[in-house]
Each structure stands twice: as C-alpha cells, then as structure tokens.
Length: 314
Length: 295
Image (cartoon, rainbow over all chains, first blue to last red):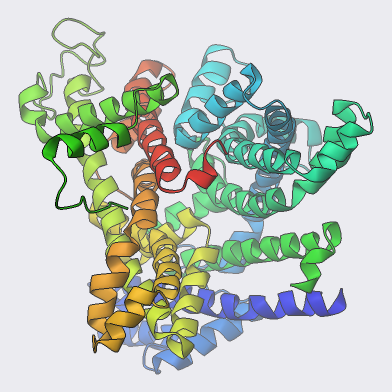
C-alpha cells in the first residue's frame, strides 16, 4: 500500500506543475498591458513604472512565474487592486460557503443517484429503469442555472418556503445555515445526480453479468441479498472515479449557482473579479479550486486501493 | 466502415443491400427521430431566422412591456417590449454558432496535437499529453473562466475558451487512434512503400480515426451550448443586445418576482436542443460502438 500511495502522489506533481504554468500563462498573456490596466490610462509615468515594478514585468517570464509560485506556496496570492485587500483573505472569507454548498450538493447527489442507479440496474428494462434513464438524460441536458431560476420561482417567490437570497454562516446558526443553502444545493445536485445515476446503473448492469452473481443465485440467496452483498460492492470502483469528477464539477458548478442566488462565495468573487479585470484574484481562485480538485481525485485514487486490492498491482 | 460494392453487382442488388443495412424504423429508436426533428427545426430557425421571425428581435415597444401571449406575440414580449418568439428564433443562430464553432476549434486544435503525440511517440508524446492531462484536470467551467479572464468577456472569446476546454478530449482520442493505426498492416505497408509521416497520418490515420471523434463532437455540441449560455448568464459570454438564450435568461432573472414566465422559453429552448443533440450523440455512439449498447 505504501508504494502505491507514493506512486499516486508522485503522479500528481507534473499535473500540478503544468496546471500552475497554464494558470500563470493564461492570465499573464493578456491582450494589452497589465500594468496599464492596473493604473488606468491617465496615470502619470511614475505610477505606471511603479506598477510594472510591483508586478515584476521587467523580469524574464520564468522568473515572474517562479516568484508567483513561490509566493503562492507561502500563502501569498497578491493584493486586490480595487480593495487593496490580500487575495488570500478575500478567498478564505468565502471558502466556507462554497465548501458547505458543495458538500450539501454532493451528499444530495449521492443520496439520489445511488438508490436510483442500483434499483434501475438491478431491474433492467423495468419501468423504473426507463424512468431513471429519462431522469438521467434530462438532468444532463438541463442548464443548472435555469433549474435554479425555476426552483427560485416556485419555492421562494411563489410558495415562500425558502428565502431567495442570503446566507447564514454555519457557526452562527447551523439549522438556518443549511436551510439557506437548500435551493442552491438542489439545483447543483440534480444535474450531478443524473450523471452519477447513469454511471451507477451501468456499473450495476455490468456486475450483474458476473459468474459470482449466478453462483449466489444458484445457492438460493434472495435477489435483494445478491444485489446488496455481491453486486453493489463490486460496482463501486467505476462509480468512485465518476464521484471524484462530479465533486470537482460541483465545486466549479457552484460558481454559477452562487451568482443566481446572490451568495457571497468563491464563484461570486471569481465572476466579479473577471468583470473588473482583477486578474490576481481570478488567478488565486482558479489556483485554489484546481488544486483542491486534483487532490479530491487523488483521494479517489487512493480510495480504490482500499476497496479493491487488485488496483495496487497495476 | 463502408465496404466497396463489387464491380459486377447490379444496381438492384446494391439497393437491396443498402436497404437491408438501413436501420428499420423501430419503436425503440423513436426518440432519435424526434431528436433529429428538433435539431432540424433549430437548424432551420438558424438559417431562415429573418423569414421565420414575426418581428425584428431588436424592435422595442415600450408601451407593451411584458405583454402576455397574443396572436401578434405568441410568446409575449420582454422587459423592453421585444417579441420573445422572434428573439428565441434569432437565439438559435447563436446556439448553432456556439455549438459548431467551439467544437470546431477543439477538433482543429486537439486532433493535430493528438496525432503528433501518438505518431511521434517518445518525448513529444510525453510532453504534449502531460499538458493535455493538466488541462483535463481543471474543472471545465473554471478553465473556461480563466481563459475568458485573460482574453476578456464576449462571445468570440467564450467560444475560444470552450474550445480550449474540449481540446484535450480530442487530443486523447486522436492519440489513441494514431497509436493503434500506425501499427496496422496497411499503415506499415504505406511506410514500406516510402510514404512520409504526413502522408501516412493524413491518408491512413485521419480517415480511420474519424468515428470516435464524430461521436464525441456530437456530444460536445450540447455541452458547448449549455456552457456558453452559462457564461452569457454570468456576463462573460455573448453580450446584450445579442438575442442569445443565455442573455435572455440573464435578463429574465432580474424580473423573477413579477414576471417569472420570461425565464421559461429560453431555458426550455436550451434544454430541448441539448437533450436532442445528446440523444443523437448517444445513438451515434451505439451505432459506431455496439458493445456499449444498452449501457
């Protein structure tokens, strides 16, 4: 197991390296001059030179990258031009909301997708299976923010079950906090659970065709025991992979949902920063979310090793 | 894969074979026919928008804001009194443009990279695919936003961003095909006859690796349409007054309390189009790779 963990950890290094280079280059090769964008067109030459100096634009590109990466690793992501606040603070203020939203949505997506996918896969071509297929196809095709708008209209504007906007921090009032994120979490979770349902179903269908299932049936086990004890466990591995991807998508999907519900999370911060051309902030958010996503997928990889000892040998 | 008909075969024989090969209209395939119909209607709207739209999509009638559906305005009017149906019809142009161009960019950028990696092998392969892996490791929307942050908001940059996000998928597919096909007897034979790398790749590898790329492209169009609408909703994609479905949703969201109906037509249009494109894509995948059928 030790060697396996080390191998997986080492595989992450080049990915993180190329990701950081991508983030750096994409946001550094801006049409126009970042220093000019920072001080404005009418600024005097001295302020402009100061800005160039501050951004390190006179240094060679690789030096700029190393400086940026070194600072980022030490937790310094630069300063916002607009508010002069440290980007790290701006981000850490907003992480709890986005984290809680992602977690709630992931829990919900799993709670929908697992039972539905297992039942559909175990009863292939039944009415339930067909309904599950329709659910999955619709969930994949529906734009999440449109679903959010519909839920907002029905449950908040018409029925007044939930407040439309606003977030109560978990530390202040856990119940209200969860309540304030129910609609956003549902809008995030439904499309994600569609993908997961498909995956769970096809994985269960695969597992049902195995010899050990026939053996289990032949020795007289109840069908429900066969499914729960033999099929579900063996169908977990492919599902786990997709789960890692889905959590990553939830994390970035929350960007749009946060804007729909006017929630002060990471997504709102990223979108505002793009509109105000505050690339330092965008860089910070993208770097953080991308890194977290890579580590979620690493955790999933390590999870395989625990569920299925065969994986380690590969 | 098509099989060349023998030279001695009569036209009647050929037609008989063709007919047998055509999939029969099956109840199970009904969704596919409906989906083709929907995509056809959207394509028609995109091509013939000026003929089909009852009004100019930009024509304002400030005395008739949020008008209810009527004979003159079948889907009512929006906050500036513009005809919703006409805007919807013109919006199909944006959707078609976004779907085709973003996927086109992804294919034109990704496939050559994948072919080069797969055919050249060694360090070229390692370097190119490591970069592609890093792009794949980004959550898609996030990468698109980062690219737009660099290039600036707008529909053109949104399409470039979506193209970059999709690029690694096509690179991987093309690389996989190149790896397999370059060892095939016919590719080896071509090389033995003195064909250079360009000829082997263009004449032998590209034509034989098209099927999975086409399937992926058909599924990609749907994702691209949703992605651009999302970006437009955030203010990062197509911009007003362009009558795109994402923009219409963005405008509708400001009047949810009083006029919730405004959010239904553009959202439903996206949903139905993407659903149809996906049904077609899934069907194409079944046709090209029957092992996956019923999964």
